[in-house]
Image (cartoon, rainbow, N blue to C red; front, top):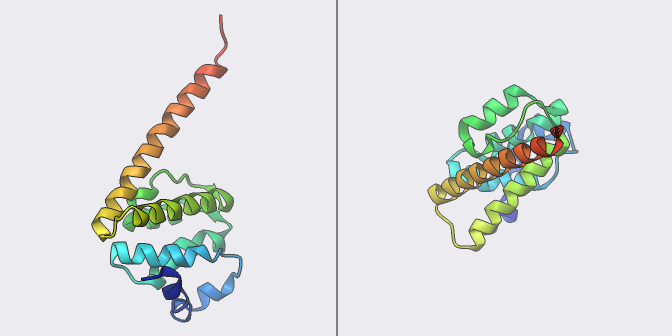
Length: 141
């Protein structure tokens, strides 16, 4: 089943929110298709949640909290965050999903657990990087 073929049928049910802002990257629809299947949610609802930061121009704390309700693997997302940083995070998420599909992870539970595991690993790496950066910039006696 091709996600792109499904995402084209997604637009009519999205309502005026989707049509207000044409600057939402098209891959957001593809991610919405993948996540709606993995979480058993409506594609239009997932798309609305994923696209909300583009409507605000920034990722708000409210956006983050709404995303975390269904997508705990987005915990590393900081709020407020720029739309550019959010876009990079979503592209990374998309690549992780596609990598898991390519490796044969097809069940929704496996997909969600894989994304949670990857986000925990990335969060741990980020913490180590921040500690290393702080140690390197500390004054030496």
